[in-house]
Amino acid sequence: MKNPIDWYDRIREEHRVLWHPETSSWYVTRFEDVWNLLVSPDLGARSKDTFIRKMTPEQREVCAPVIDFIAKWPVFSDPPRHTDIRRLILPAFSAAEVERVTDAVRVELDRLGSGDRKPSELFEGLVRPACEAALAEFLGMDLREFDQVPAWAAQIMQFAAQTEYHPEVMPRAARALAEFSEFVLTSARKGRSALSAQLDGAISRGDIAASDVVAIYGQMVTGILQPTMSTLATAVELVSRGAEYREYFQSDPGTFVSEAIRLTTPFHFAPRRTLVDVDIDDEVIPAGERIVLLLVSANRDPRRFPDPLSFRMGRGQPPHVAFARGRYACLGAAMTRQLMTVALTAVLEGRSEPLSPLRVVWNVGRGMRAAERFEPAVR
Image (cartoon, rainbow, N blue to C red; front, side):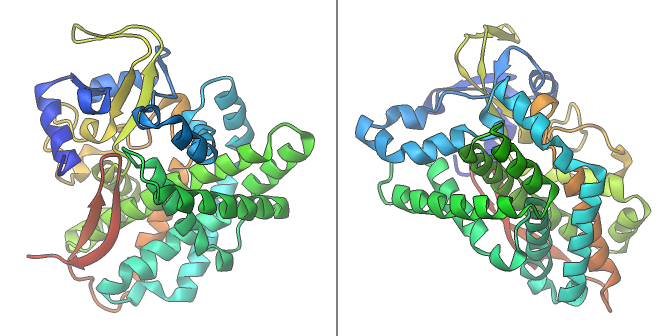
């Protein structure tokens, strides 16, 4: 699967649903089906992990701490646990907290003087620091101590992305998890943000275990930082295309940002499991099977989005599935949108001359794609 996005697009046009023996998964490809199944009571959150089932008992024992950590992420939890955690952390996503976080980003970008950086410096000089400042503020972490957090997350996710056991990967992931856990619990005790104060209080009351707090933070770091950097990178690429695109953003930031997010869809799919037999296009998926809802192919489905690979302000803001939907919808969607607006405004207002055309360089994997840097666009 050289370019999984191309493969997802191809199978969407050939199949509404496809059994894939290599991953022991059923792939659901089209917008209407993905849209409906995201809120279906017939699906559960935690899917069968074929990689873990391939391990020997000895390998599973070695990997147990990291496996247990990832299994506790809210996105992989079913009710009632998922419902309880979502109810607990929901106040941290209030409008007032979103505004507080984005105010901190404005201050950081003003301090860095990010607007007038060279195009080659914009990723490391604006995209990354804006997203890291937002996440550190939201999680209640000191930004000066934040630099190790993305590295820990990357080492843990390297393990999670494996399709077969690699003995050299596991020790790094285990060390990263131990260090990350200590840092998270220290940060939560300081109560510097609504989220950290909420979770520290829950630990004190005995409502939640310390390991659950580490898992919540782990999902936040991996689920917010890189995807937000990627969506913001797409938006910067768009405004670099010329005056027309800059006017699009300035006239209607909400629509501009929504279309940039749809085009990016950094997480390619949402894995689920069938709780009952599920019938799609006369194909019956048995209960207990792994079913993969292809968010990226749904957001590029021409039946829903004509000319789907093009940026079109004329679409308005039709609902898409980049943030999923239903009880597993991304709680940070509003924060991502506001952060992108603040950062793009800094790019445009802080420059002494127009931004030259840029192209995002992507690292594309089966489950997500990550923006790595900008390079000059070929006209």
